Length: 73
Image (cartoon, rainbow, N blue to C red):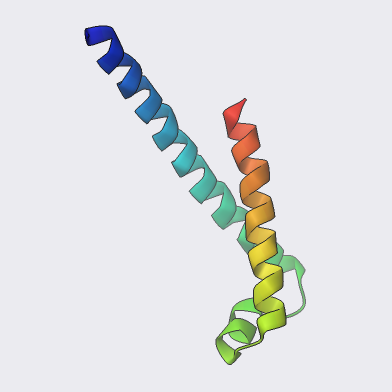
C-alpha cells in the first residue's frame, strides 16, 4: 500500500514539474515571438482581430505540443 502512495507522489511531482516547465517555456517563447514580429499581437486581439487570435492560438498549441513532448522523454 505504501508503494502505491509513493508512486502517486512521484507521478504528481513529475506532473507538477512538467506543468511548471511548460508555463515558463511558453512564457519565454511568446516573448521571443512578440519581439520577432512587427505587430503587437495582443493589441490586435484586444481590437477583435480574429485572424491574429487564430494565429496566436495555433502558435501556443504548437509550442505546448513541442514543450510537452520534450518534457515527457
